[in-house]
Image (cartoon, rainbow, N blue to C red; front, side, top):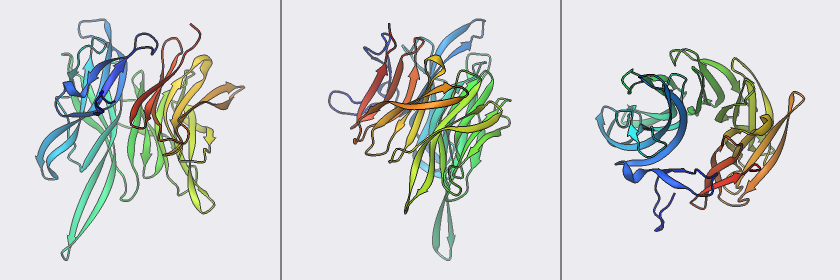
Length: 358
């Protein structure tokens, strides 16, 4: 978001009147060296002395100075913040920012399990340089990363890396979306250009692949969003690349399965542009709301899926900023079923809403 002078700031905004007015509850100005906030999550967390409390969690990118074998200077660290008073105040629960020691590192998503443990998913680039006969060769390896903050019984967290999967050189690998259902953890992203959804039932000690997908063999597929469909199903959204005449196209893909696997494609939508689904929300009457972008000149759209006799019927219910630079980052629904999609247009923060009847 930008201030009146046009300067960019990272922040979290809150509305208590169905999106009519908004207030800033977290700003990068309040935390030294914070660059931006990647994702937020709300969870009911068990308290040490008994009972439970609704809390907010955010994962941010914060500059930090490091000096180690792979880097010296300022890098972008992962930092996790928590608010126990609906956003009025925030504290760092990750002992400041964390550095993996890779060339670059970016958090992407955050979630909380039923015991209050915090998980953060993201990616990193490991840069390896080799010198042979005075010739330097640089090779990049992308990593699928998950960090876990385990509650320590004192109101704090002990942090550890529970997934660090190194992709092959020249291929794309990253963890992007993460969510918990009870104590089970689900992560979606891409590993060596393959769309993957992985699951852990033991707090991140081990992981199993419950969905692996390519729209066309040999072409990249990437998952960017993950959610429950409200009927014991898991839904992932992302893109699949396929051949089209003398070029390729990115297709908007939504896949659904059970917590144990069995995923099938329920929407493969060709937009004529670079499709990029980025968020999933559960709408009224079991409907799925998937939001994403249509490329640099396409704007953003919401695709609504309606369950019909064991299948799904899809329509485009909102198209914002067609033929513009508008792009969308996520979507959420409130307790009344109102929908809120957030993104940007021409460098400005944009929230669009669809209200149900009062």
